[in-house]
Image (cartoon, rainbow, N blue to C red):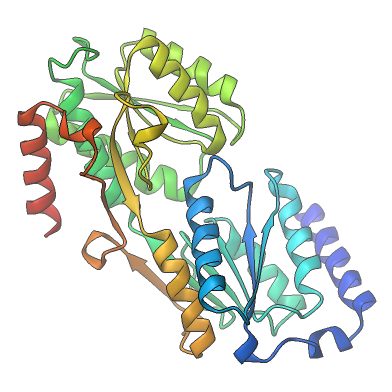
Length: 333
């Protein structure tokens, strides 16, 4: 891995030398902001990236002189650093904005070669580099509330709830934010509904393999899971398919996804990624970004929440909704 990264840095350096020193002098003036929205994956099927792109496009509509480029780097993580290095080598972009916990390490390496390039990374945390600013959503909070709702449902007498007290979590891959905050928050929330609830956690190994996610979901249902959640990008379509066909429930992270599977997706968390993206671009435009530090944003800050106004939620049993809403009001007010 170290050897591979070494050669990656050499290749990026050669790209920089080939582009010539004039490239960095061609950056646009601040009043004509130029920003690269670097998508570490693909937009379709990923709520985080969909909201990031929507925010960038909304900012572009509000600021017609701005140059906003949205680039999808694909799902091969080994290629991200090379692609990003090649793109910033032109000196075109005042800032690179992305959203991925693995991006800070990549940006640190690139900043060694292009020390003038600035980066803002959402859904990540990193401090100490004066070219990098991060914003981390408190996903433990969102996980806790979704887990609590899942727990209330699995111990209920709803039509698709079975006698076993078991909830499921399907992830595309493991990474520190997921294993350190989201999965623990989800099961801890479920256990607040009933301490005997168990978690079945499984990993797809891909952000795009919907067939594998469907197979995992089917096996988990056979093992007693009746309520799921997922952080799996496009692969989560496999979970939706299985839960729809075999009759299970899903609680969803980050966006209003009820329409994807009516009566199956019965609760949706909300992450204000679009709003934050617009605010971040405005702060770059206004020159107010404090690079080098990290911020944590949660429910109390108005950047995480829950989508209450949908029939899939409002038609849940009254006792479930009352307990859940009391939980939200008391814990996060």
